[in-house]
Image (cartoon, rainbow, N blue to C red; front, side, top):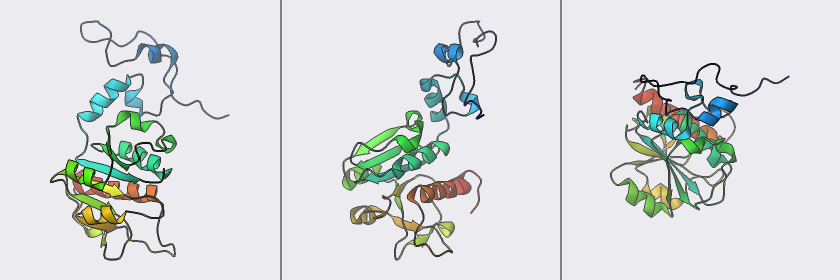
Length: 207
């Protein structure tokens, strides 16, 4: 039998603050009924607002942006990974609606910004460099590129990759080194690798 996801009702007295009043971080309905959400244990029973506020206190200095011209299912996977690595925010460029199933509701705990086109993203970014991730002629290997601490990692759609307009707007286009026969890897997997490269560089100090 498959184990039940999450935790049941809070055992014992409900959490309080130092003065004995109810701890505002906790959701009374979750305390009473249990918490089956896709959250790490430290956030069990917390309200959504309390989780977002706590994440905001230590978000990392990179954003992600995804071009959304064809309702690509992989966008959800990219957004879920952005939550795992606590990106500053995620940006949807193109169509406002995107397939949220792959995000596993993790988008609720992030900041979402929409840009109608590439020019709008470029205007919003200002001095923040746009770093495209795509396997293209002339692209540079991400493994040896010095990713800036403050940047926007930009991902295209599965198949077509970054649009010509987005490529022109990027400070650099980086690819992930591959050693097999396939020409490219899944867009969601590429996004996870790129974000982890940023973590290695700026959290773990690996050059």
